[in-house]
Image 1 (cartoon, rainbow, N blue to C red):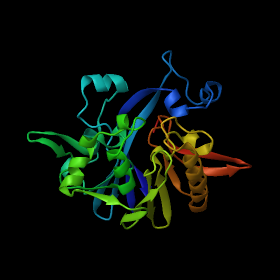
Image 2: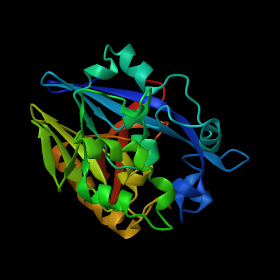
Image 3: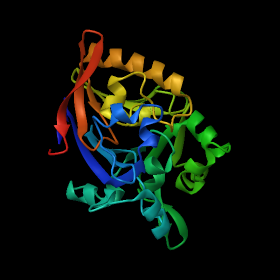
Length: 283
C-alpha cells in the first residue's frame, strides 16, 4: 500500500504478458534497450498489467481494468498471458468486492487497459463493476469507434460501448477533476485521447502514468517511444511537459507496464532525467 496524504493506493496486477520487444521499444536499437530488458530467444519481454485501487474520501476508485475474463484460449496464447492472480482476486484480497467499486477510470480504451470493464453474464455483456460509474475521454471514445487499418485491432466495443449506451460511462472533455484530488489529465501521443491520472492529497502528488510511458525508462528518455504510439512526436512533447511537472510537484510516478520499477520519483542530473525507484519487483 502507498500512502499519499489521506489516500491509500494499491497496485494490483491483472497478470503479465510477453510481447515482442519491437512493440515497447520501436526504433530504439536492441543494443540500448537490452541494458534494461533482455529479450528471450523469441525476442519477447514482459509487460505487467497493473491497475490501481484508490481509497479516497469514502470512495473505492479503480484505475484501468486489465484484460478481464472475456479472453478466449487463443487470445490468452497470443498475449502469452501469465495470471497467478487476476484483478478481481487482487481487489478481494484488499477487502473490496466488484460491487464495492464506486468509480472506474479508463486511461484509454486499448484492450489491455479496459477489457475488464465488462464480463459475460447470463443475459450477455454486463458491467464487471455494477455499481460503478465509468470515465474515459470523449476523444478516446471517438477514436475507438472510428477506427482505421492502424487502430482497429486495438479496440473492441464490447469492452466499453454497452456502458456508454446505458449511461454508466461518462465521456470527459479534457482535463477533469472526477472527485476532489483525482483528475484525468490529457497526455496525448500514445493515442490522441490518452489520459493519465493526477492524484493530490495534503500537498502530496502522484501520477498514474499509463501509456504515456510504458516503462520507467520511457519516461526518463524523451526520444524513446513505443511502436504502439499513434503520434510519437506528440508523446515526446507530452513527456517533456510531465517530466517538468513531476519535478515541480515532487510527484510519485506510477508505471503500469514496468515489471521492475513500479513507482519512483524523478530527478534532474545535468541534462538527464532519472527515476529513483520507491517500489520495485521485490516489493
